[in-house]
Image (cartoon, rainbow, N blue to C red):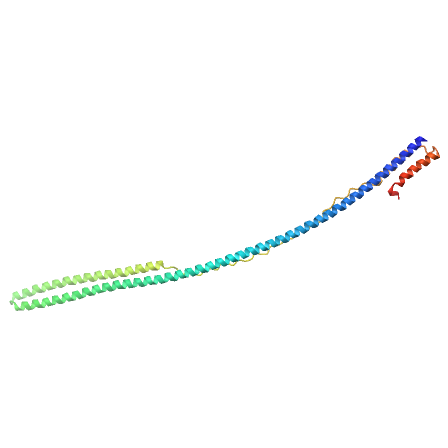
Length: 297
């Protein structure tokens, strides 16, 4: 009887362990499922935060680009306006320099012309004086000749008269020849001086022309700045929530079936006829364990 009771208790204990294992497995499965849902919610929240950040960052990049592009354009416009103003001032100054140079060149050419004209006039006056002196001296020689002829006529006649007259004429002719040669040399020297005056004027005019500025030309306009082309914007890809690892589940029925199998093995070795009282106690113990199984309700 006692052995049968102990064996019955063993059967009930095996069933109880199987049932307890099933309950533990069911609770572990519930906890794993809850943890999986919690991780899924967390991943969805993280994906939402990441997408919002990427969107804000993308909009900030666009805004920064447009602000920088506008700043660069405004700076380029100011620089262009400054360079254009400087260019206009340089052109104005160049035009003024050219006009001053042109005026000074014209004054210098006029001065060269006046100087050459004065030199030529002085030379012409010198030649005129030389010609006047030649004519004056020629008249003196003519008077001398006439006087010589008159004195010869008053003197002795014949060979003496002819000889004296020829001698006076020879002296007068020699004097006239010297005067003519001197005048010719003076004229030739004057012509050379006239040539030198003209040559000097030509050289002075050439120096003026060499120093003359070239007429300034209008420089090409400075290109106005332009805005850069619109870039191609690529929005960031939307981040999808990650997949949570599937909950690791345990078999609920495996420990129960194992407990039942163990109980069945134990029950096979029991003598089921020890008496009515022992049987009742065994069945009461088994029924109590089965009542605690939530899967049989």
